[in-house]
Structures are given as structure tokens and as C-alpha cells.
Length: 212
Image (cartoon, rainbow, N blue to C red; front, side, top):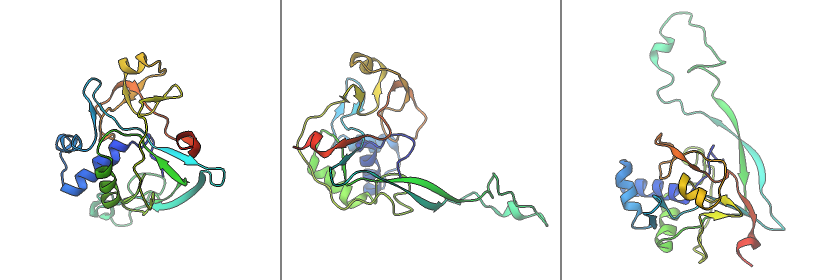
């Protein structure tokens, strides 16, 4: 399952490093990431792209759905049910229906651009990343079976579109349009947003686009 924003390689590495060394302070994780992934000091971002789903003539991107139960921690408390004959509200609030259906995607290959220690990054992903996407830790979704490091060019922009979150001034120099609030470094769920450019949530290209 793909979240509301594009999945980036640096976000996956952020999770792996925090998990591997049990670090929760964002600044400490970011500092450790610099040992694996190149950081562009000029514009303040890691040299890491968003995820591209690659397809072949034989296999495309398949759409499906996953049923899941929402995380109930700290939602259903003793106080909610303390009153006698308490009515249960199913339309909203903490007692709403928690079995939900989410759209999911399957692709034969996933591709990321990055500049750094490819072998070490691959090892972290294989050993400490349970899956890619929403609910990878709790619902066994987003499974991948192998990872390979393939030499290639790195670019912040492809086909006139951002390949990762970029600051406003730099994106405008590259000819990007339609700025929006973005976070420039992981974790991308934090609230420190600036005006900039974001990659498409879902990017699909042919395998032959990168590998002939």
C-alpha cells in the first residue's frame, strides 16, 4: 500500500538506521544516514529519489485491495465504556468501525536512484526493512524478496518532473511548476514543511527505460 505521499529511498534508510541502532531522535538518525547516503549541502536534501514501479511487456502493475484493522492502541480506554448502558457509535470517534479496505499495488520491480554506499544500503534494506509502504510492519504488506545495486545516473528531475522532494528556488531553476508544502528530509511525516516540489505519488515506467 502506498501512503498519501511518494515513498523515497532516504525515508526507507531512515527507518532502517533507527531500527538497527535503536535511535529515535531524528537529528541523530540523519547524522548516521550521511555515512551511507550522500547529502546535498547546497539544497539540503539527500541524493535519493522516490520509488518508481517498473513494468515489463509480460508483467504490469496490478491493483488490489487489503482489508486491515486499524491500530487500537490508546483509542479504546476504560473510560469510554464506564457508563452503564453506554451507546456505541460506529460512524465515528474511537468506537467507529476499524476494519477498513485499502487499495494496494503489486509491481514486478521497484527502482530508486541514489548516491552513496550501495552495498551497505542494500544490506540495511535486506536486514531491517520488513516491507515497503503503509502497514509494512504490522500487516505484512509491501514484501520484497531481493535487492540489487545497479550503477546508473542520478537526477533530481526526469521528464520535467521532480524525482524527490525539492526546495522551491532549486526546483524553479530546473523548470518545475506547481509548488506545494513539502518536508525536505525524513521523517516525512513531521510538520516542518516549506514551499517546494514533490514527486508524483505513483511513478510507473518500463524496465527498458532504465535497462536495455
